Image 1 (cartoon, rainbow, N blue to C red):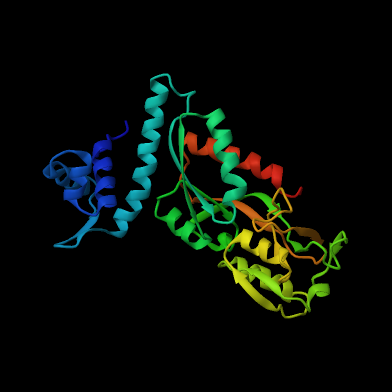
Image 2 (image 1 turned 180 degrees about the vertical axis):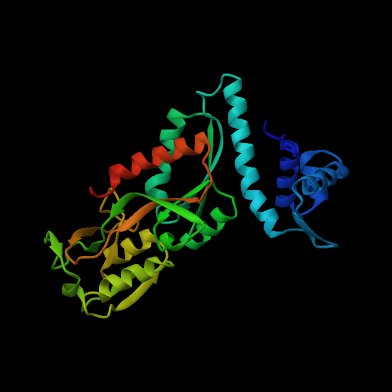
Length: 309
């Protein structure tokens, strides 16, 4: 016979709120209960698990111990599973509802988030999607901290991270953009060596900049990075004004830019691995049913945009 579990879901919930608030006082205010109830629940949880979950520092609040950080991940997953079990028991298992927090690499947002919200609103009106837009490293830190369910990003070194898993859902080869009227604009494709004498407008984001500069450097030429910007659309607008060429991966639906100019896309003949679009998750954490549903929608959207294998 299996031994009974010594702790309760209420204790886990109080522990999570205390961890998020950083103090028992703030946790009790959020939960609308007495501070003594929160303190007692956390104390009993520590006793039952035989570990210290917080370092209590006078005037500095609560700091999670390594054991507390591990429990934070596990408690979130366990409480999410408990909510799903409750829904099934009440006969609402077919209706997905509740929050899903998605991390999205900042340049991918215009291409995927509108379609994601539109599809999920139609299919799963009960799911509430929140989004955190950031650069890759910030997203992965947020994912490790348990503040998002999963992240949509490029596989910039993700395979070397032992804490995270990555699933490739699409691949996007690099291509070149030049201004309309450029001498090469009527070509089907181009090699980067043909543009070596021209300035490069660089999408200047961590990891992205290394990818693009390495791509140009592989041709045996040193890229003339004349302009830098962290905005995808600013890159396109600067190219449209004749300030140089650029190398990108995601393809907008129109050649027009915000500034009213026009760019021409050219296939890149230089051999270089495409960027892999990835769904990143914490290793060993099982996603909730609603998170899995949102991930499935993103897979469908990505399949319609990426290059065929």
